[in-house]
Image (cartoon, rainbow, N blue to C red):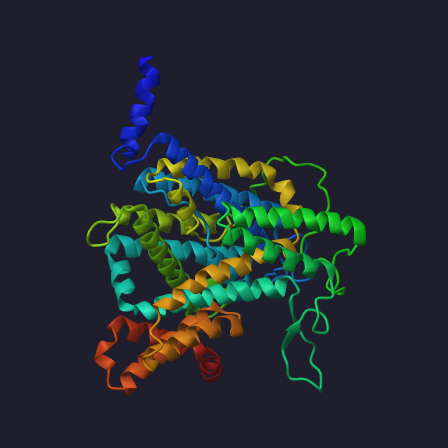
Length: 487
């Protein structure tokens, strides 16, 4: 009997559960709810980074034509999320779960991989994590955060949300690229001939409305429930209408993934992507390009983490009178390790997830909730055969929903000051319009510095902003510079 009572006491003491006004039951329940709320990443990340075949329409091919297999990406996504979430809970004692960041994985798949191989792209993710760790250790991370105006931080979040949304709309076929024609200058249009004329796109629309209703009704795990329910609809619909895969030629077929009942539900995880990393990107692309890609990764990783942790800490009532979290440097250090681990496993950079707010709402206040969430992620590795059933049209609604959630940051921007409004606007719209997070951040930073300087407010610009803006000027001018330097 003594052992039975002492074990909960040791757990309580280690995680300071009673001290923070919680109970073991609340922590377990909070960890479970957090997992249910963010488990969609195990489904979504493989569809963003991976492909079922190099021959699929929209397959994410690297510069050599190679792809990441969806089942392997699903396995490492669950593995790294589980390990980093548990580590975060044990080291920082905060109920903030970690997984592959949506903004960064989209950036890797769309912007980086066409210029290099998948292992090289993941090598840059590892470098990003090492840089983040160095910034934490040296204290520079705080200085960089303070240098960027709050309005631009908010604009970066909004721009990433719009970018993610646009990817979801295109992948689902709701928005399609129009072929070049003499009688039109419109680059994209609605569906097929300006109508939703395919069964897969209809599934996307139903899924989007379903998740929207669930979110509005505050249903726990709304995104995951919506994706799974839409997948069931896709399986039933395909059995009736036989739309078949798109194959890159049939606009009425399924773009990625094929909704059919799998041969098995359980399976041993294929972890062959672990360690498949290369640092050859520095020689495959110009060094300035590789450096600016890393800079963009660091910037995106940094602002996402700090903003998310601040919001979650306030919601959990864990910040002090100065708005500081307890042991924040430990938390930031583990976040940097998450980037390294994600790159080393080809799962993309792992970061703190805002969905942790659902577990906090259920009473989670300590790292014990993270241990529960992490163990559930590790268990999810053994269900990878199910992920092949989920078509991108069933997962794309989650991208649009996440984009909508990130739009809430727009309220932090003062549109009354045009020297702020224009840079923020450029940051937000250049990302989706150029299909690049880096371009959006660069447009915002450069325009902000110039507008402030040319309106007599140069002294209000932090010196680090001048350095960053100058780097982006080089980034945008890399083509002409390369031409001038060519023999």
